[in-house]
Structure formats: C-alpha cells, structure tokens
Image (cartoon, rainbow, N blue to C red; front, side, top):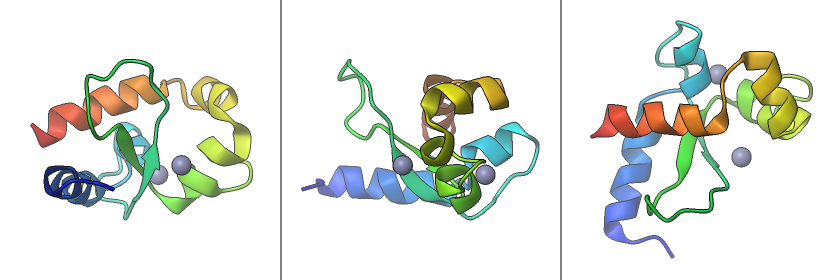
Length: 90
Ligand SMILES: [Zn+2]
Ligand SMILES: [Zn+2]
C-alpha cells in the first residue's frame, strides 16, 4: 500500500509525461507509471512515466521488447530515465 507521500510523488511523475518521449524531444505525452526493478532503496517510488506506446506496445515498448532490447533500441537505460525523472520532480 502506497503512502500519502508516495501517492503524491506518483501523481507528479505521471504528470511529467512519457520520459522516453521527452528524451526524444517530445514533452508531455500522456503517460502511465512503469515500476522499475532496482536493487538499492534510494527511492521509495521507483517508477518512471511511459506512454502506452513505449510502455506496452508490442515492438516499441519496455514490456513488448524487454528491458535489454529497449535500452539498445532507444540508447538509454531504464536507470537513466529514472534519474532524469527524479531530477524533474525535485
Ligand atoms: Zn513515449
Ligand atoms: Zn511497466
């Protein structure tokens, strides 16, 4: 169960729009939250915003292609997208 602080953070993250579209120069694409896998516990909300196309599209998304392929195709890692997202909501 997410805490109030986490919920507020998730809302802000979703409002940023897709982090990959932003990386490609298109800001503000409506996004859904993607939970990333990470080992550290630096953040209590390890999520990034991704549009449906980049989140679950069959050959265009992190779930469709898998994380490794996604990172090769888009030349950015999930972790880098996460770091950029964190900076934007600080
Ligand atoms: Zn996108
Ligand atoms: Zn996801």
